[in-house]
Image (tube, rainbow, N blue to C red; front, side, top):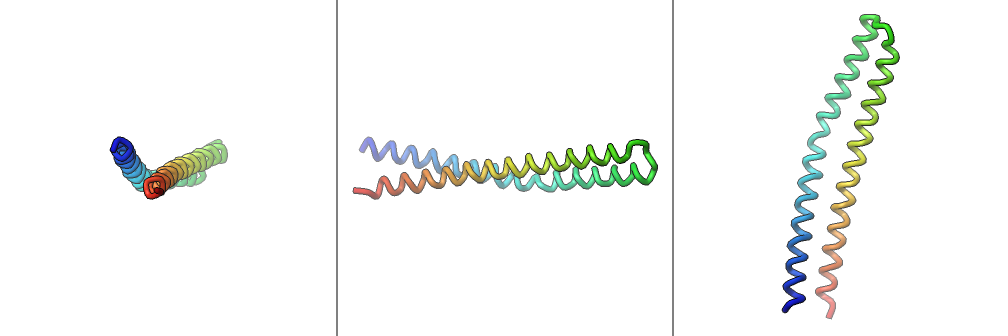
Length: 103
């Protein structure tokens, strides 16, 4: 009885972690439009710098491009980190199911 109780408690905890990670992943992916908007603004600023012959417009464009690339890399890395955590929780759930089913 005691081991069954602990197993049910662990199962509920894993399901809670899984739901939390799924919500985090969904929220994280829904924020992608913000990153695309920021990159579009950077592109517009770079174009305006060239149109108005701003001194150092090439440097400004390169800096904005690097910022945009870094933001996208960080976003993708966080996305992959959340996905790996979700996969780990799902694997742990499967392992615990097999442990209970074994005689």
